[in-house]
Image (cartoon, rainbow, N blue to C red; front, side, top):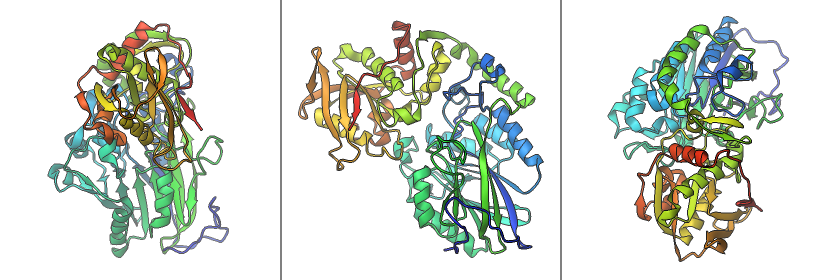
Length: 523
């Protein structure tokens, strides 16, 4: 274990004079970009051009280009890395898959990227194509790719880059449960992250590399745990949990950087809204002397690079007809935020669940279950376009109907709260159903008061009775831990696209008013 040189978890720079061999490195970092090439609104959805002109928008690849260019223009030694999930989240991905992520990352000259779970959303073939186009090393230490030789040839466990005459080792990690979160297929075998990372760190250390950065797509809470478990890791650049770290923003989940022993942990929210910048100084033995910095908010004060704006406009042209189509009016903002929809009843969860149930109620379906992680943005009050709906529901999931016993429904709700503290996407939004949960209760006993709407009234769920359920094909096929639905009776996974179903529901109920009505109660 590297000896502790840091004064506290808050990390202050040491006041002693710098040794002649001290090495200063600035790590610029992004994570969970999710194809937000255009500016986003305060709700993380696509921002209307007039709002962008008015200075009310954030991010977008054109601002990121400017911010990175200006950071590099300040001189010094700089490393640019990404902690995963470039894929999935807008119509750009639906049309271009990973092609645009590779194009812009190459233009920005990234030094490395780790594989996120969403990089597997369309299987190994799409990821392999992306990896071939990407000029930066694509990293994933905790996966056996023997069964996918094409991908194996393109993905490395780690890489050593030289900056300012110093060697820096970079190791990548992806979630152990990626098989549940995405569609990697049967041939990619994910392995325990800490063991895989330590093996790679040990190999780099044996080769004389003393400065090691871990790109982790495991989430902030997991990063804090592995920082304590790993030896000889200096910096963890994180993603997956869309966490904002800051020393100034009261809404931040922790300080920037968060120190666990000698390890500096950083992450920069999501969607290109921030560019992380960590300034680290190492001594001649490769130990951290100081680490400080902040995520830079890419608001209207950051000019958009004109050439990049023009390129994005060119790429967006084929998408305009689809996303400009007006769907409906909504009377108030529809909250689809990650914080709301992965921890309790949320307005977007109610909308999507209601839309699913309304579509198939006449087929004998009584219950709708939506995974909170499938809801990717909020919608502002006013005019709603198809582009807005597709930003909320970008995965092209289809409606799935099936039959299961009441005990399986309760098990599904229990699964939904099983990773509440991690903000996991498995939290269950519902319609035709209501329930209570107690996070402090023992595993298997966290769900109570489950009621089903039957014959116009609420009835306690019967564990032995068969119910008709609607969800999306991802959940029905076991995604997000919903294994209890995999062998469901009369399963049909090929219904209409969930975004189309939701849009049609909004049309039928326009002007739509969001609802929160006590479907989910936290004890």
